[in-house]
Length: 199
Image (tube, rainbow, N blue to C red):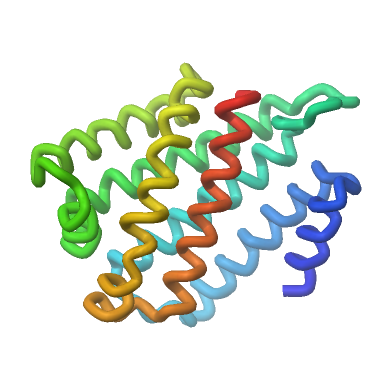
């Protein structure tokens, strides 16, 4: 926890932002792996997919930040390898979202409660997430894909993740866990905005 606070503080002050973003990605990967191996995660498979996919995307966001993307006055050249690795992690997240729309009744209901058109719109969203995932994984049309995703994500945060009554009361997701998932989606949105403007 202390390492996360330290990395966040230095990144926000702009001190060695690339190094501390890389450190934050490493710290998050190690702590998530330790929690998984230690058997501290006792949730249903559908919730594990939601949790781990967002953690992977946040790690990807830190790698994008560590690459130098989004820096206004870039003193060193951008690391394309770090950026492409971060993009792959974001692509894996999008694959998991698409998978959940097909195989998780909890996620399907959350979307069906808020979208017009029912099942047809849900299938169109599945295709859209799949196409965006392919773009992030392949490295082609990244800026366009990130711009589309930066329009979709705020709606998902507000309407789907923000529906605390559904997740907490109906699906028994702990309040703190849902707040963490919302916060992670905000972080993913930040990474996507960086790629949408400087991808």
